Length: 261
Image 1 (tube, rainbow, N blue to C red):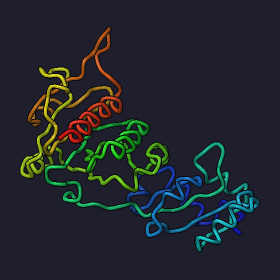
Image 2: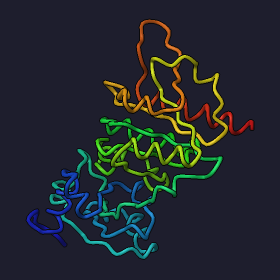
Image 3: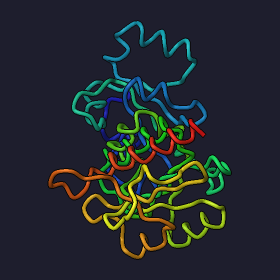
Image 4: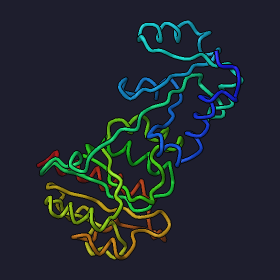
């Protein structure tokens, strides 16, 4: 049993929870809680840690034994120290980051993508992954300046969709949008300057929606690369919607149209 916070494995967990640099260098991240642990594909698991309190529940011990998963026991005090949550559930794992190629996100005419520029809120990004899975998205493209997908708050917000939604981090959105154009994907920029409402457009072909930063929206040079501007109706005195909400509306409109195709 690990009983010291000075243990190197525990130090690594703390670094993976706190630092993007550590997650990038080790190509790993932390998941906590029984639900997220059960969602994790076995081939991505590196190491599993459980607390003394967790094992006191016979059902938890039986689950670990039946699954044949190797785990390391950690004292309750040390587990609380390394946990990223205020009420630790007693199980966490070091997990390999899934890796995809650009082509993994394309499904010919059934390609439906989000292209995210500099999204900064972990909850927004996680929600877009979760909603994207529900709406049948084929993948999500993120600018390099988008918040770290593998940060603990983002991982929790995905509710497991992080394992099932293909993604690609773009070093240069101009180049990536050019690759989409070559692949026959029509790009739509969600923008206040849009002349047509989203429900007036046809999303039944290969489609990508561009969503910008929560505070500033899409950069002009990025929006201008889109094939079409679109807008979402705004009543009252609102200027814009939450980024995840706007993305959800567009994803499900594309899903509706494709169901009726």
